[in-house]
Image (cartoon, rainbow, N blue to C red; front, side):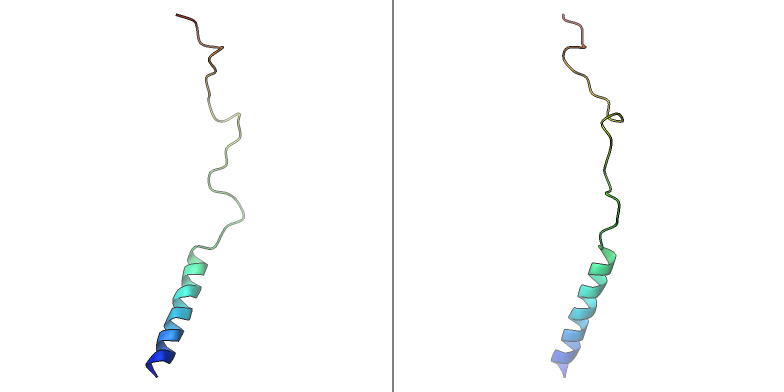
Length: 47
């Protein structure tokens, strides 16, 4: 009887973790190159 409850609990916990961590349609950290400021060595003045 205890094994049945343990199995049901594990199935429930797995289902909840998959539902909570389910992947969304859009990525979290996607930035276009125009938004990221970068400095190239050719643009900086020579000392």
